[in-house]
Length: 127
Image 1 (cartoon, rainbow, N blue to C red):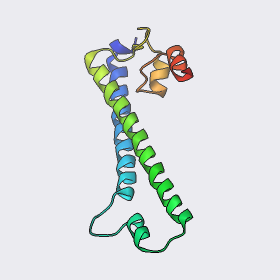
Image 2: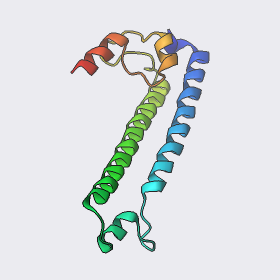
Image 3: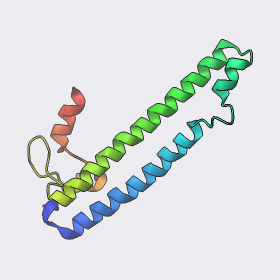
């Protein structure tokens, strides 16, 4: 049982913190690219001043929305990691949140932030 194996939990904690660090760097990189500096006009601010083709404006809006969605995806994954780290601390890591069964070690090694067993994950994704 993963929840009782200190070596397994240490490894899970390390995988989770490594992934948290990686996702944080990626999120910050995307956020940095899309952030605006009020002293320096951005492409979108320039578009309001310069005569641009509507397709150019549409492309810029699409790219910004895509970047926002990517950052939101990172935020969701980071929240899952924080939840998993909390479950390690409170002793519930490795237990399916739906049925209460033990999540197999192999699944937790592949997806350390897993909250559900494979069966319950499949049911959740089918909805």
